[in-house]
Image (cartoon, rainbow, N blue to C red; front, side, top):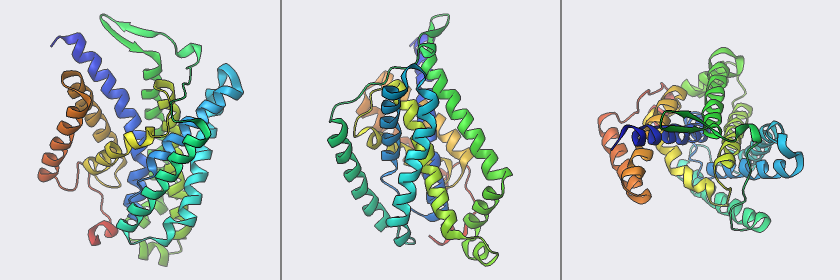
Length: 296
């Protein structure tokens, strides 16, 4: 095992971890705030990928400036509709939300097959993202560097939103004690919808990054949903910082294990390591204080 191989796998793991982080941020918010187990969250990523494909068809070489707002708004609106029609009727029943959202994910996957076919649709990255940065024997593709930068920008935006804005203050208040926040005038129902839509929109942005790396197909979201949940659990439910650290760690472990073994064996190794870690720290790396979670 040489340095070039390890460096290449670590870089791949960092780019995979960036996608996982974007996919897991919404899950961390929705589960931490609303105790909703959303098995359809991966389909928001899929929607973002397909909207990127459509933007590339419509807008030409500079499609990214159209794809990002389109994916964010499109996935966010889908999340708001899902929360309003289904999720809000199942609050306090996490197993019911799991079953309901799993059914929704299957419906969305079938809808994607009907609209785009069962094979993946490719998205060609803009010319300024072609090529790679060469550091000795290590090659760093510009498109993967762009995805890593995208994750950092979104993470910074989320940190500012949750820690420096009035909206974030309300989110933290409801996360810590929903009843007290409602008594102080916070509209928790509206906040739930906004947070759910925000998480869906961020997953849509993740779909843009993923579409630049690999073809988009109806099951692309399902391939990421399990690892996104692992990121949330390892990082600490509701913790943005914990999700970022966990996404990077899981990305590194996955990339190294896949490089040394196979994809299926790497997933098994990852699950064993996560289970062992949770025996040591059952509340994750950075547990948050939440009355809802303590009463769960």
